[in-house]
Image: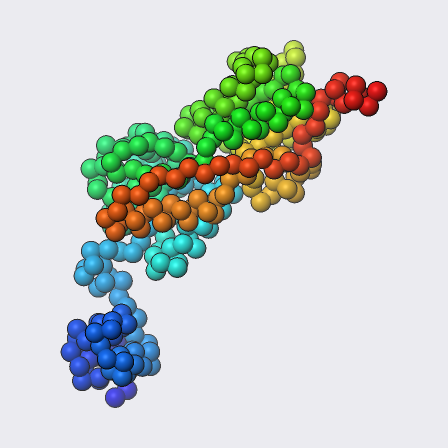
Length: 346
């Protein structure tokens, strides 16, 4: 029996055509071994020819799941977020999940609205790349009973798990690299929004300065808004000081790119006059002039791992939060300071 392909086809229609029960059709469409191979093949053939598709709404009523993941990012303009979301989407696609994306623009009220909106859409779980949400709204999220996985932040709680990089260790590696080149005045450009990751990277930077007896100087710490323009403004402030730094470690690559621009606009050179290192290793960081030395984060893998943790939570498991390690990628934006370079060639 051939069904009308111009009408919405239901399981009842397929059951009538195959002369079997509704439950048999449901099992056959799920490839259940409880249905014999011949009947299963017939049902799947009828379903395929009639253009039958599973109703997401109907399935959610039965399973109490929407097979939808909510993702909250600070901004979609951030390439870092884009690469993490790509990893989430790849994982979601292979596990038959859809993704709803919301941007909060580092605004607590927008974050709150975004989370409420995702809750109203009955998402199965939420992945959050805006680290403030765990700190500010943990009681609310816990009350929602919706599994939450934070990416690149860590706020432990019964309902919150995380995938993050060891920010302190990565910052230590970057700062140690600059100190090892012979730089004595190393500045830090952080993020003014007070993210947990910024505090950890600042801590790693400070630890190395104190361990190497360079000494931590508060006036060598500036803050941007995470964007190239913010990095440019912060760098302009550092360059206007009586003793400008010979090297700068930036909270992220976008700030570093802006800092490089500020150096050039002052008639100076990177790395001859100022060495600059970033954090993230965005795809465009190898195309800057000069290419940027940075700490590489496994961005797509972090998105995929967050998805794995979320599915484990939905299955009733108690997964462990995961910590990844950054890798120093050496490029041409860092070099020994000019005085040290002259001595080595003298």
